[in-house]
Length: 119
Image (tube, rainbow, N blue to C red; front, side, top):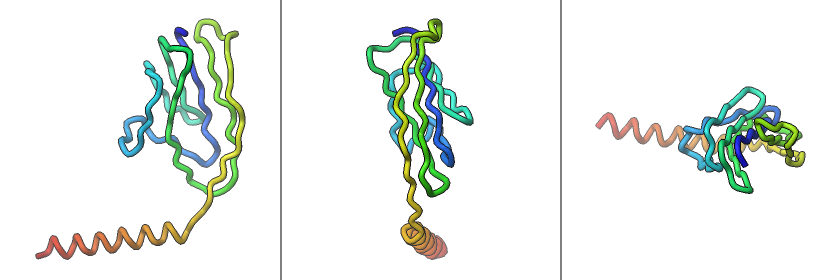
């Protein structure tokens, strides 16, 4: 397929991490441009095989249950040739106890580093 555009809308309460963020593997089918728009991520492909895999990492900012609307794909110069994924529900759980443990662990780590630095 040539000149393919994929539009992946983001769920409510989620932010899209940039493709340059090296903490996560965001391997995708080779693309020319990835646009991290406010309501979605757009991938522009010049030449692809029969299957396209695009990945992005979302950071959930709120707990709750959200509807993820379908991703849309179309040929850029023949928009009548298009397709879409399914809709699904995303459930984000709030785990304050785990978050508190992580914050305490980071605080202890900083105290140890600060003590070591003063010697």
